[in-house]
Length: 128
Ligand SMILES: [Cu+2]
Image 1 (tube, rainbow, N blue to C red):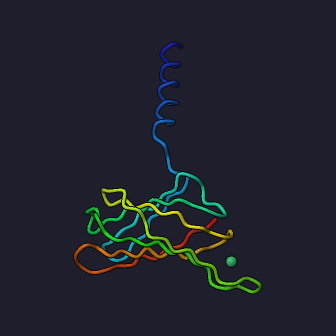
Image 2: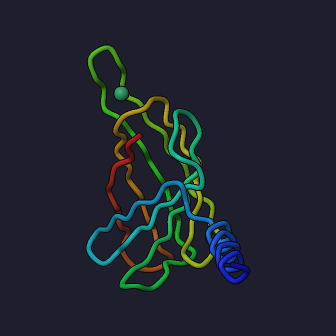
């Protein structure tokens, strides 16, 4: 019984330490990949996203990265968009806070301008 309690406590600790992201999504364009995460579930208003960018499996460092979320006009609703230059967190990670004014499906474009080489753009969607 004692050892079972220990195992149970160890499992509980393991779960709390793993710190799973509330939102996670992967997207790619050719060999460029984006692992998108948020610590909180997506919601109406400000959402802070961390995007981990790689090209051919290697972190894309020191790029200029811009995130644009937009929703085309719908009946009774104007087009909405939020465009932000992401902050460089190092190791290919970039953080940006987007304002998503309503729930639904948002188009997300990630614009990557590396220090050298070609620019690229990854397209995906955010749903909530
Ligand atoms: Cu809408």
